[in-house]
Length: 196
Image (tube, rainbow, N blue to C red; front, side, top):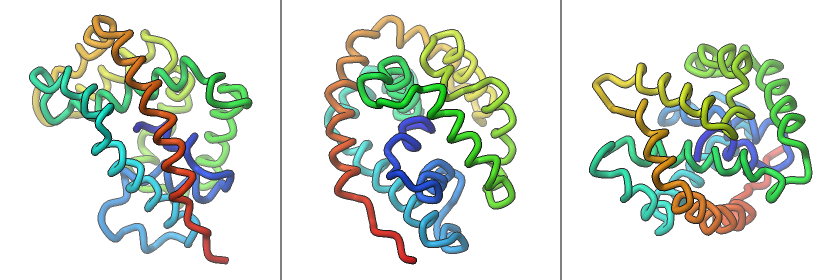
């Protein structure tokens, strides 16, 4: 899953949500430098990724893209699934998406000085271009894929991923709708009681 889903899947605790959000930029045992709640969020993120990568529906989605995008197939599906979460947000949350994302940005800004360098670097662009709300529309999603394609070390072709989404839109949306309730249920059972 990508940024929006990870934040959404966090318990109602700002520090755990922060850890879940930043976890991709925290490698190995670097998480140990954070407080217990942020650590728990980072570990939750890793559990979500592990569960997602092994889930049969997610793997079914990635198989559609494997021959074209190889190791980036899972990354692309993560973003597709964030698109479907944003687009169908009212099916999963009573809080308005704009309000939810605005609160997330406030927490990230408040904790800016402890963010990993990678998150510090992308956060101004994320907020200015409102990535998390923008996932709901295909034009903004194209910009996300363009940016990712520029950051890869070789020609990943990710700038073309929007066309594969359009060509298989119903299939990917059905996969997301089948998968996401399983992931929500999984996360309910993964919440570690933070130490005080």
